[in-house]
Every structure is written in structure tokens, then in C-alpha cells.
Amino acid sequence: MKRPVLTAQKMFRSLRLTLVLSIVVPLMVISGLAIYVGLGAVEENLNDRLREDLELVARAVSGPLSQAMSDGDEIVMGESLKSIFRIGRVFGASVFDEDGQQVASLGVADTDVTRSDSAEQVIASGKVGGAFRQVDGVSVFSQFTPLIAADGRIQGLLQVTRKRSDFHELVASSRIWAVTLWSMVSLMVILVVVLGHYGVVGRHVSRLLEIMEGMAPGRWRVSETPAGPRELRQIHEGLHDMGERMMRAETEIKESVERERELAEQLEYQEKVAMIGRVAGGVAHELGAPLSVIQGRANILGRRDLADGDRRHLKDIEHQVERMTLIIQQLLDCFRHVPDSRRETDLVTTAKEVMARISEEPRCQGVELYSQLPDCRAEILAEPTRLEMACVNIIRNACQAARSKVTVNLAEHDGLWELRVDDDGPGIEQDLRERIFEPFFSTRAAGEGTGLGLAVVSSVLKEHGGRIEVGVNSEGGCRMSTFWPAYKPDDTQGGTNHGE
Image (cartoon, rainbow, N blue to C red):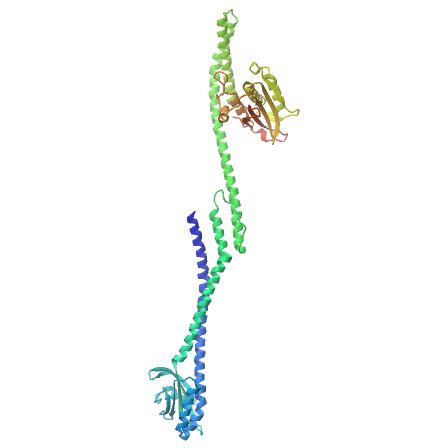
């Protein structure tokens, strides 16, 4: 049972991993791309803002610088450059004349811009311009602003520089915050998905897997109550229905196997009975003639005057011949094939006639027969001769085993007439109750029974679809109950021949 559990756990992990890979990971990738694109836009916006800041600073001092440059006032020019550092965060500031030569400088700036494309464009266009470049080995953003004289001509340039790292530090800080936020959101999403999956889906799926693992022959029924989302409840109900169908199918298979076994046993029994019947018929045919001759000769000798000893021997011969004839007759009765000559028969009448006949037999003298038969008719579909033979054998057997009395009772139970015969004899031991119906098996001493009487009863009951049960009555004696299917006018079951 450990291996399926591991399989179930792998299936659960696979479902959870699939959920993470198919939903969470794509969601995080998309959000990461969105953040990357957003950071690019933010970076561009920050660069624009930083350039605008430098442009505003440059424009704020370009007027005083232009006037100071026209007046040649180096003091005002120096103070204006210092004010740039007080107004904004700059790296350097320089003032150049119209020829590109440096007039004043503060901080880190170019000393010569005659070869600067940005400076040439500003002088040519008269508009503010700038670009990223290297100044004294430092990457800076250089902003050029034209200094316009009172007559409108460009008399010089103002260069304001700011470190490139100032731009990058702000963007890098934004990126760090964005990555941190993205990581936290991703972790929270994964936790929510994993925990939510377990709470809403995972535990119910795991329970369904446990139910599936527990379903086995004899344990198909699903008794748990459906839980979880609608789809999982539908799967649970499907498992329940499948289990019910499997239980019904398993029951039908067992019943079919049992029916096949019973049919096989009946076929085997019929084959044995047919074989024994053929043997018994041959034996009866071969022994019948010699026994008739012996019986005839004994009768002839019996008519003569014989001494008492000889007559006693002759009586013994006649008794043994009669006993052998009875054995052959019972053997034929036990294994004889009876054609389907059944008809409606009253079991009460048959039982009364049998009791009247047996009460006159010498072997039943000294035993009281008590009848508890109903006044109504007990209709069964039976072959009268075989029915009478079964009743004779079971009541005679009880008389021979009884000490003083035999009680015959008849009652109907669940569509069966029960002919119950009780005696006050010693009873039959539990381990012998199955063997007493075997041919030639007897609990009496040798020579007192043929061992065929109860075998005849069992054979007749099988022919008529009945059964026989052996038990103990309230007095400790033997109770034999034979059950005969009751017959109704519209009964078709009784018409089936169960004989050999």
C-alpha cells in the first residue's frame, strides 16, 4: 500500500507544480517585463527632468551672465557662476566667448569647446542643447546655453555639467525598489497560490486520491461526503457511482460463479447418479433371476416336513433373500431415472396413508405415532410413488431410531411445506449429519440397515426441488425436516424436472 501513496503524493506535487509553472511563472514574467518597460519609461522621464533642471538653472543665470559679459564685469560673472552651485546640484560651470575660449570657470568643465558639436549647434541655432560626454575622465551631461547680448547676437556660451552617475543613481535606486517590490509581490502570489490551492483544491484532490487508493474488491463503496469545488464534487460523485456499479458487478459475478458451481455440482451429481443407476440396473438384472430361483426353491422346501433345525435354517435363507431383494429394490429406487410424470398431490393425505401403513409394520411395534397434520390440503407438484417412498423411508427411519414415540408435523413456511419428523431416540452426531445421506452409510449395527433409505429421500427431494435438514428436537432426539415447494394453480416452477 506504500507505493500507491507515493504515487498520490507525486500526483499532488505535480498538480501544484503545474499550477505554479503554468500560471504563477507566466504571470511573474509578464509583470517583470511590464516593470522593465516601465523602468525604461521612468528612466527616460528622469533624464528629461534632470536636463530640464539644468536648463532652468542655466536660463536663470544666463541674463546676468550676458550683462556681465557685455560689461566685462568678471566679479558679477564669478558670483553668477557660484549661484549656479547654490541653485542646483551641478558638477561644473564655465563661460565661453563667441570663439569658444573659456572666460570663466567654476568646478569641472571644458576649457575649450571649439571642437564640440553640441556647442557648434547651440551657436548656430541659438537654442539650448547638450549631450553626455567625458570631461576630465568623468562622464557628465553637458548643457550649453547661448548668452545673447542686448543687440540680439550670441556673444558666448554657458556650460553647466552634471555627473552622469547622478542620473544613474536615481534610476538604479528606482530599479532596486522595483525589483524588491516585484520579488515581494511574486513571493506573496506564490504563497497565495500554493496555500489557496491546498485549501481549496489540493486537500480535496488528495482525499479523492486516498479514496481511489482504498477502492478494491470488496471495498468499492464510497461513504465520504463530497466536498470542495463543484468539479471535484462531481468527480467524487462519479467515484461513488463507479463504486456502486463495481459492487453490483462484483455481486453479480459472485452470484454467477456460485450458480455455475451449483450447476457443475448438479451435473457431476447427475453423471454419478446415471453411472450408479446403470451399474445398479445391471446388478439387479443379474441377481434378480438367481434370487427368484433361491426364493422358489426355499418355498418348495418349506412345504415339506422338516426338522425344527432345518426349518430354522430355511427361514434364515428366506429372510436373507428378502433382505437382498429389498436392497436391490432400494438401490433401483435411489438411482432410477423418473420421467416427468408429476401431478398435483396432497402431502397431508400421503403422510396419513404412510403413517397408517408403517404403524402396522413389526419393526415399528412399541412406538407411538403422533400426528400433528393440518386439516387443510398441502398441495405440491410431485410424482406420487416417489413422494410416498420418501415419506415411508423418513418415518420408518424415525420409528426404528425412537425409544417410544414419533411425532409427524406439517406446516407451510415461505412457499415451502415442511414435513417434520421428531423421534425421542439418541439423535445423530453433528459430524455424521452430512454422511447419513450417502448410499450404504448407516449408523445402525451391521445387518440392521441397508444404508439406502435416507439416500432415497435425498434423491427424491432433489428431483422435486426440495431439501432436507437434520437437527435436534427439544427432547434430544433427531429432527428431520423435509421441505417441498408448495404448488399454486399458476405455479410453473414445480413443472421443472430436477430428476436424474
